[in-house]
Length: 107
Ligand SMILES: [Zn+2]
Image (cartoon, rainbow, N blue to C red; front, side, top):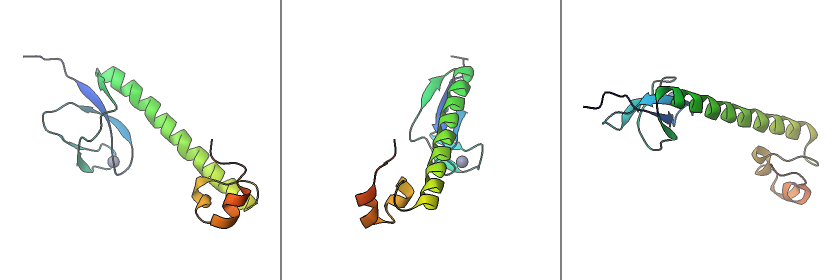
């Protein structure tokens, strides 16, 4: 039969890490980072191992950048609060002031 191995890009629901997994008949897989067993819910890409690894790097980089900017906004928010900045994390916490003074809503 077809000997070419196919890979796909999946994301762990538990630790949120994108990773390359070999495509299997069974929908079950184990996260390489945290070991969590889960089923394939969403596929973020499919192809050769090389292509998938490249894609995973991009996705993980984007994700950590987003986490970083979220944290940064949240930090600024907690320092300057509550007048100037408003990050999404704090938006819910200061409903009244928040909405009135919201000059800067995320991106
Ligand atoms: Zn995981």
